[in-house]
Image (cartoon, rainbow over all chains, first blue to last red; front, side, top):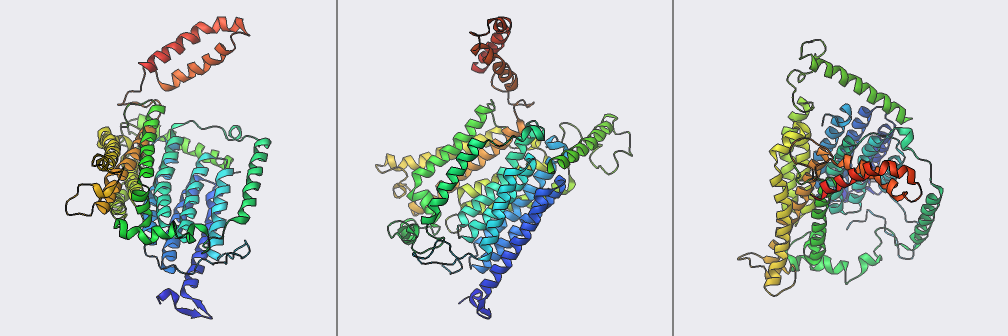
Length: 101
Length: 195
Length: 243
């Protein structure tokens, strides 16, 4: 019986709690999606995607803890390293629409 | 396997109970997909498509397909966005109003019919995580690979064992397809060298 | 809604860049206009804006990302991952470096030989690993017939396929796609395009020539006027392409 199976309160385990927290982060991501879709400027979208990437890293880490799968952290690590690439690619692209790449 | 995915009996109604994380992730993925399809600006579509891949990776992860999620993360966050942006940088920008075509109603009807047909078949699809789903309960396929992989190949990752050993010839075909894609890009762009 | 605002944003970008080009033409004489731009004095060659933030961050992040790509490749047997994912991550590191330090510089640093050797070598190694058991009387990719001393041939054969086969193919092809897309249709510099005319010129002439030739039976007057010109350019383009 691992930590995530421990009963927290009223029959809810730590796993349920962590999954609920992850769902809350996804709700935050949906809120941030509004900024990514609406804009109005490209800088808003770049920032929104960056925040979404960081949010996803958190979600993946919480999922890994809740489901007892440490290897999920590998995926979170990939996003943490490559989300930066997406951000700099888009932000350099917005200057003169790719003329400076 | 833990019981986080709500399991339903084989005879249970099709509408399985769905957890909050699944519902929110589905909402996120569907919203990003719709936003990508309806974006008026191509650059905005590329950016929102990056967000879509984030949601898909989280969904794959929740369904315990970490190999697929890792592929989605590496290819989508690292490669697809960059290549699409480069393509945009090298092509001319079309005026927004000219780029937005009116709806093709016959095509929309055909797509709607296809969607309706697929939706009808959804009734017979086993619920996600169901222990009675054929792909899981079949002792000759999934269970055999899960049980025999380590003894026969010496690696723990069943997905990699299936890719590299049990279905190695298919993987060779895939690798050749990737190689051919590089050559095809050279031919289409009329180049003799990459760099 | 978003379309109009995007247009405004791009217009603003164009204005800002126009002002910057103006200062560059004046040879950095105006200190007021170039204030806040560290690189506007020393910028030369192809248009490429250096960013101290991006370059410094890439210097820190790239080694970790590349090491992680190698880990995903080499540790594919015990954790999620494998050659495809690791190769894609390693290629993404090259993209990262190219965005930070300029695509042209990265192209010169990572020569065409390296890219081609990765892709072709990976394919050949994969095929070789499959064909060695065939030569020894087995089936394609029958790992236990690989002549490996002291090692489990099945396990290390699979690892070899992932590490020396798939990962180089994927990373090489992705980096090559990146470079060839960054070059575009009519890029300048090394790597001559196939044929003496550019791609756009030949297709433009061919597209102009095709409808005239197909409609030639109906509208003889127009084709008599335009056929010699279109036909000659179309032939020239075809000869150039076949050469």
